[in-house]
Image (tube, rainbow, N blue to C red; front, side, top):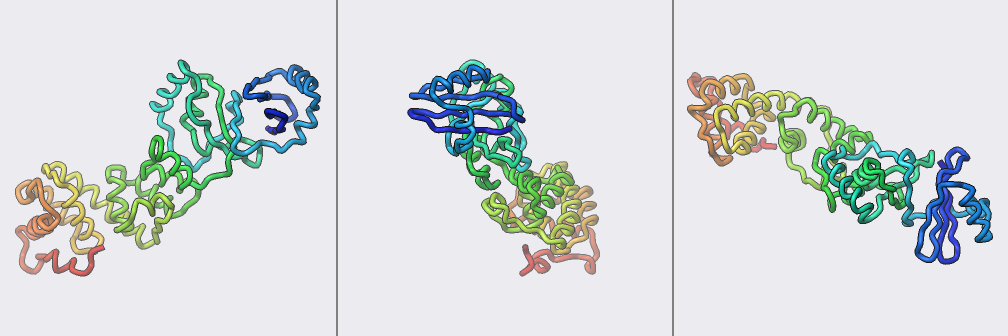
Length: 315
């Protein structure tokens, strides 16, 4: 596909050809726009203006930050590093378009090497156009970074942490591929807990900007800890614990620092958890309750003092 643009007095002309075959053209003059789907009609109008098709083809090409319109949906492609589309959101926009047509800002695209329009911002609106057979209004911009795309979307239908991980992973970021692998392997563990296990203290901004780094030791240790944490989480739910975060935080610290034998803690949770763990606890109380549970009916030589073992070692 090849797109051409030519500024004229009080307006402009844009034309699209695909492998030499005319697709469509738009002529905007004095604020009014007309689409030409027949090349002969378009050429006749150019002749009326005293312009040749070569004049158009020798123009400046697609003009940045200028709004174009197209019904050629095949000319648009998605960038792989983007969040998944929300079908319900698309259907809602499409139903509105059927009644009211296009409303709001145009989608933003960048030009690919093979002259396709890569959607940088507006994939839901594009899919809604396609579903409702509504022409796409679009604007050509410079290719955006993942963070730029996400920042734009956060002002509309915001990106979640998982959206950033998927986007950076598909864009080839090795650290985020590891995060995506952990999410896929441990679907019952929240992203917040996974990040707590893998990188400890972190900011949401670091996640958004692609600054998360995971070395081999962190990754393999995280897999080991998350396997145990998945089972322990289920046990905590079964015994009716309400303040899960307090207990989970302590369990993560204990597992990361190799303070406890995971299987022993799992057995204690299953056998005595309902009796020894109150449903609600602060973090300080949780470490006390878990220590009592872990050491319940153990001989002195096998008791473990959690506070002493974790002192100065918490992640």
